[in-house]
Image (cartoon, rainbow, N blue to C red; front, top):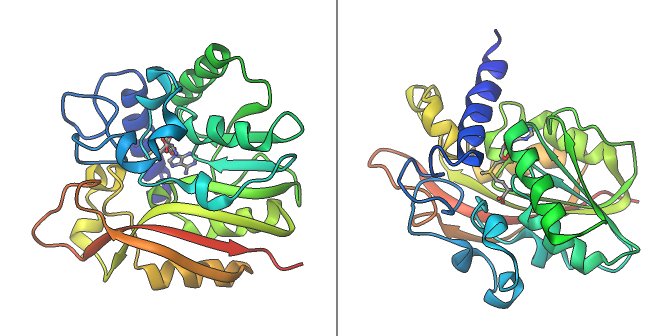
Length: 258
Ligand SMILES: C[S@@+](CC[C@H](N)C(=O)[O-])C[C@H]1O[C@@H](n2cnc3c(N)ncnc32)[C@H](O)[C@@H]1O
């Protein structure tokens, strides 16, 4: 099996177990924590309270992001939105409200157990303008130039081929389309030994790359107007370790030129 397949398999196993309630996102005892390692974090730290107030705990309890990519996306009614790594669906459901019934939201995820939870949440909420598709973000099951806005919350750091993710994102966006990402990035590099730690990779830690490299990959894929809107110390979102580069949770936006 290739290294990339092994990473996918490790990540899928982790999020499958989380979806089934077998482990919390953090390896701790409580579910509903944030992206990765600190079980005291919750949706309250990531989203405006009012935004998520009326979402059922089945949705908020499966939120494993590291920020709020929906709000910075400034969605408009009628837009078509794609969520890379949609998990239990929280950002898809928030986006669906904002684009309204003339808009549409597609969530793509590679973990069958997460897709099952997302579809159960969709049925519970009774929303019709959201669809969850099985697939990898490195080879999106989405037509060329068919999407207005791409959002993603704490997922691209998990990919073993981030260049392919950005190239696919560029392919499926309409000219003039935009991306709004919340993700874990670093300043500096992990050692090869830490990079090889797949348990920490799957916890959204050692798969993260330097923010300059991240934005360079986006530029190489063709994006313009790339902006790191904000970047906060990720302590509280992931568990800090003694020998690591500095780790941040960042909001990054960009545009596909017309
Ligand atoms: C940290 S969780 C974030 C889920 C969701 N975005 C949220 O905010 O709650 C990561 C999700 O991305 C999915 N994922 C990770 N790597 C992926 C890949 N290469 N292709 C598709 N899905 C992926 C996992 O299955 C998991 O559901």
